Length: 261
Image 1 (cartoon, rainbow, N blue to C red):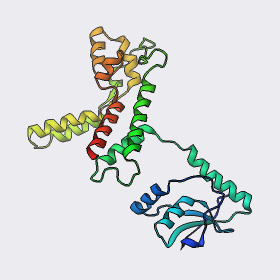
Image 2 (tube, rainbow, N blue to C red):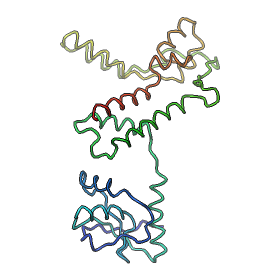
Image 3 (tube, rainbow, N blue to C red):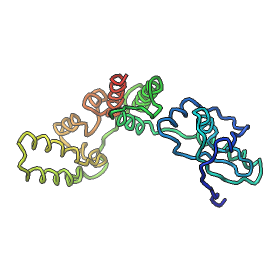
Image 4 (cartoon, rainbow, N blue to C red):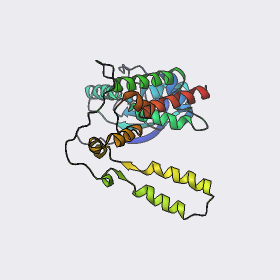
């Protein structure tokens, strides 16, 4: 089907009506809070043939409850009532099928929580946020633990090819460039030391090559690689040495949420 033509207008709120067959139940209170904080940033969709709302019925109801006199609307034209109902249901169903990237959501909430106004205006707060953090914690456990043995799934490192060169294991290009820039400055030694330590964040590790490199090494080198968590052999050591980075993110989110509360 060709792309529909949409006409965007600001119209009297009473010139359009919610669709009487919209079966989805929306949180009018939450939508009202969003409208008060951010305004209307997405138009409702109206069937020009009937002036009934095909998408955004609850946005209309929330705006109406707030006493708005006008609303932004995008007009499309359907050929009959059957097509209108199909659009109405499809819009509701696509919302049902959507999901979150939980780790991305956690990072985003952490970023916003550290701002001056915290999570205000996101609708993630209080009990909802607590539930989200619990779900994320459970996800970490589910993905980390073998449901049959309750043990961390540890890779088996075996020699399967030639030993990679150490030059293949890491890319120091960005880190070395920053080091050179810092060394050329006249900054105090303690500041230089701090900045130089930060350059290690720009070292890029090739963990596939590192896994191939590990079984070729002496026990001493293997031990040091394990302590640096370049490979994972022991579950408890891995967690203690910082492997569970996402778990740390969840812990930080909990602490920030407690502070804001």
